Length: 251
Image 1 (cartoon, rainbow, N blue to C red):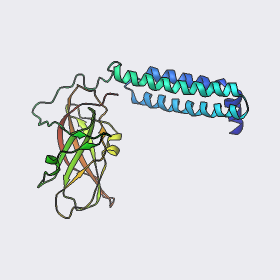
Image 2 (cartoon, rainbow, N blue to C red):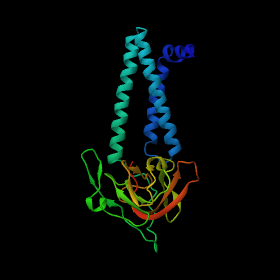
Image 3 (spheres, rainbow, N blue to C red):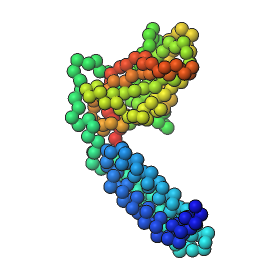
Image 4 (cartoon, one colour):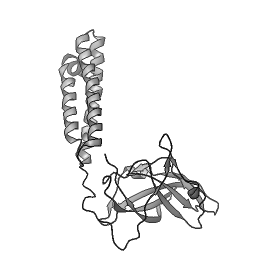
């Protein structure tokens, strides 16, 4: 392994340099792609070349080859800044390439609710109004909230549970039954539930979750299902579902 590193990173100093440039070009070409597999491959390849060039640069400095080391590390620094700038610019002003919701229509004969807007703190913490905090329920219920950007959401759950466990969400576009934001939604929407001693208690998320499909200004209907996984290893079960008009997060 050591000989391999010496041969392909230190002796052939131009190799990690060229690989980083190649990975950067591929990243920029695919930045507007909706193919998640290609995007993941591009991201990991870029990360690999960044680490490679970083090791190569410091390796050259340790060997006393200051010119090559500074060239490699300087290229890495400028390249990363350039990628961040271009990515930010394209996300703000670039063309809309997420076509998921372009031809979707809100379903008819389906009750659809709208997420409630919440106040946002200085650090983007969601602040529930007192009118919501004081709501009491006599049965299980679920309420979706808009977070600080379209496509970002939080939720409250009123539940009577005899077991400790975890609740999480699944979401589906209603007209085509397409499951949304797999697999991140389950992890990001997970919330701990403690046994409530035969009473209805309210549990709230402390961080937002993202629906990636779609873009700002392109509303569509989504069914949110609330699932419960008990701590004792029992089978996951669906507690309830509600339909909302939502938008995807603009990448």
